[in-house]
Length: 328
Ligand code: T6T
Image (tube, rainbow, N blue to C red; front, side, top):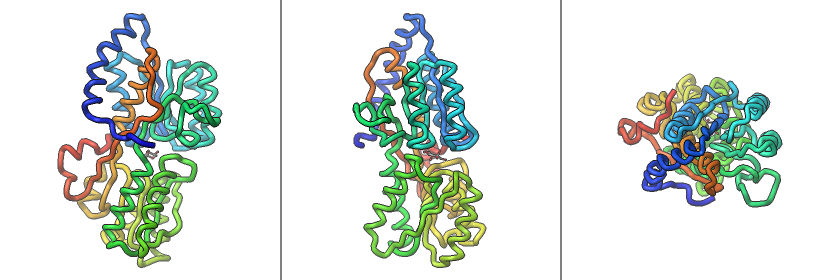
């Protein structure tokens, strides 16, 4: 998976192309409806993605429907997807909550004539439009490079703990493409540090309270614990809270994936050393633009990569960094 970073120039030229594109759709008398189904509705990451999607929808004169489940869970997401398919939107953008369990529900959408683009997470192996496999039918995958994100986290944590000691990954649950890849990137990179031991991963079901309790039990069993990688917003917030509750903040280093509003005070207080902010607004923006491009007959790339911003004490007050902190 290459070419992850879209240049600002391309972004600007896309924006200037919008006016022409939306004229084209209006002239054809068509107002498109695009549905965005997040992993869950109450997560600042997806709230921010929705905002970016709305910016593109407003620029293009598209009706954007945002509908999702209250938890990151395929059992709750599939009925939402089925309800959306019933409304027959012109395209579906979705963050599938499981690599396998969303394959056949999404196939139904495509079979009923609704193109599908996945945002943030993928189905199958994430390689689309290859003409191979059962899950290559989505048009495009728009996301961060999550393996690279795991590598960045490992390097940062290794540095923070002086390249030695015990660490673990606080993660959501297996079979989520993003968090699986972050853990993989993290563990592969950690193999380069012979004095770092990676303990067993703790799965928290996207529940920050569970992640905090897990921190306390890992720490009780390993009082020499040196660091934690929180592989998404709830995992990281939970690990940082667990460290606070165990009076281990600052002693056990925490590297966080994602950047909710609370990251500013957590970084300033030393509860979190480094946060890797994704750019969810870009993901939502490009999701709508890509769907729209397809609908008006343009070809679209099967993979669009968005960037990261790494936040620590040294830059947390920089406005150019702060703008990547997620909206609540
Ligand atoms: O980290 C994001 C997202 O990329 C991941 O797929 C699920 O968790 C988040 O939404 C953060 O909670």
